[in-house]
Length: 258
Image 1 (cartoon, rainbow, N blue to C red):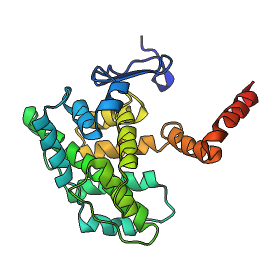
Image 2: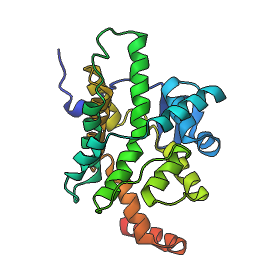
Image 3: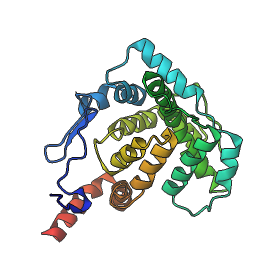
Image 4: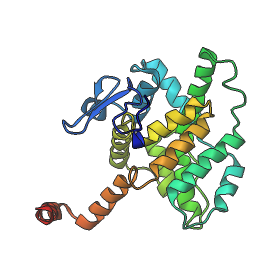
């Protein structure tokens, strides 16, 4: 007898061996490594490769991965022209979903899944690295384009976080700001089987291209019940304003819920 379970409530879709999270206990681990340890000692590049390969990379492997990211930051001119035709007031997440899907047309994957096996897994791994490399480029390009400016070209001599800040502001990145951003990227790199990850799993199960898989995940993340939490945090920080306002603000919020 089949049981109807709306929204798959109570149905475990899969089990992740990539990360573990327990919100009530405040526990988050990537591949068995506590997030506190990674946030303090790792970098986004090293953490990304840990998530992809399942183990911390050797110095040689990390150098090769870092160079692959730096080498694949540029996007085709046609992608930039496509972005110029998007509404300037459009939501950035919708832009990003559109741009990632667009990359799939300008950097076609071909019949990458036809044969199956390890060769295709390596191909998908390489395509994933290219998407990682180009994601911040698309974000910063959009920030300039929607404000009527030309995008700033990426630099290969900068780290992932440093290049993001450079392309966003057009000036040498502040080391402290780059370190803070790098830590934020580590903290947000993986949160187990959330809604966007589940959407990516569904898309990937159909043998969609890596671009299509990520576009599906971004579309899911754009929903206010998923990615909207980050936007609320930004609004909260703006409302608090200064460090000395944090305690009174929190007390006010707690009193309102009492």
